[in-house]
Length: 97
Image (cartoon, rainbow, N blue to C red):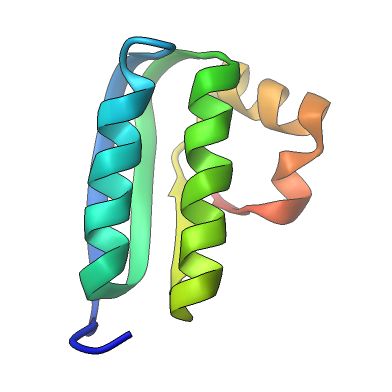
């Protein structure tokens, strides 16, 4: 990917990542991944995530792989971490405290 910045870019999510919010998160991550080698998704203010939110994360991870970029999830609360572990995505996504 041409024109990628070496600086990390932070995308901050908050509230509920559900069917209504997932498309805007997906767009924000896609835009960030187009121009940055590392994108950090700050989940510290997320109170709920459903399968649409998980789908946005998987899609972003796949895009990061295609672009040679890195997607990092940071600050996931107990509820979100539980969901990531139940689905096994905590093994596929880079999750940091």
